[in-house]
Length: 295
Ligand SMILES: Nc1ncnc2c1ncn2[C@@H]1O[C@H](COP(=O)(O)OP(=O)(O)OP(=O)(O)O)[C@@H](O)[C@H]1O
Ligand SMILES: [Mg+2]
Image 1 (cartoon, helix red, strand yellow):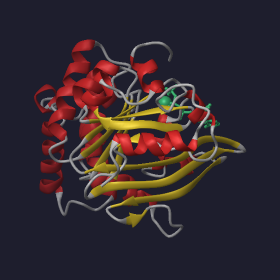
Image 2 (cartoon, protein in one colour):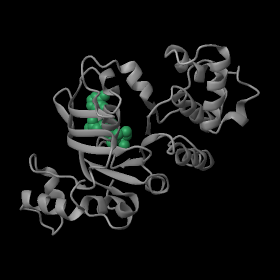
Image 3 (tube, helix red, strand yellow):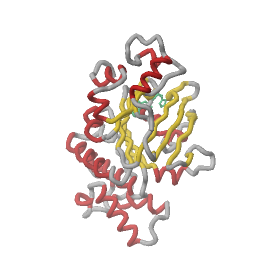
Image 4 (spheres, rainbow, N blue to C red):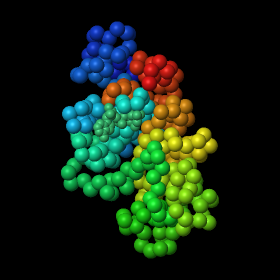
């Protein structure tokens, strides 16, 4: 297990003597070396385990030495000011950064103990195991049925049409969309409301039987009612999947997650139980952010 918050604070403080606060403060972030995330980086039996992850866009570094475990069946929220690297870090977890030519990732990223960074790793099955839902719902220009059936088809998960029908049905049920679309499966996915489209994208991710679902601000384009539906869904889905959600809403992080990770200028400043982060953060930067002093 990781050291306690206090152990880590002690180490961090020792590495940064110039800190003008009894807690590891702003100065610690400026330090190239000796920076240590405060809180519970390690978990027992992690599903994902990231160590010393650094990311560059050309020669500009966006993520600095981030280490973080993510447990099975947890929802972990990633919060922090715009540009702090939340999306960049999330994209490391299913190698979506590979699609950005100037982007380079170093460090170790294990999924169920296997390194996903290796050159021989096929990213297509990886991205089925670690699915992604984006800020803006992005259904394919196909029918509702085909949006969900596409993944199982290309991954060869169903032997016949009956199995495929059942997979589509089950995925739409799990995504909380079945009742609303069961009579119009042949109509375009793009014809649904924004909240329905986002649930369709979640159904599409679920259809390939993932282990982890990455969500990058999945509700930011939705109204409060659609947002509440997605939040309820996240809570149900975590019984089967691991969910990493980036959000700008601290209320949302508090509602849906069990742990919260606070990022600042490309560094993971603090990670801990969500109630701990929001009621008694250990790091001054986390406190400044959650109390609205910046960001
Ligand atoms: N494709 C890219 N090319 C170059 N730089 C990029 C690219 N994507 C992100 N960056 C830079 O990397 C840093 C982190 O960006 P990132 O998008 O991960 O932040 P974020 O925390 O997700 O921000 P937001 O909350 O605004 O979505 C920023 O300085 C950003 O300008
Ligand atoms: Mg982002």
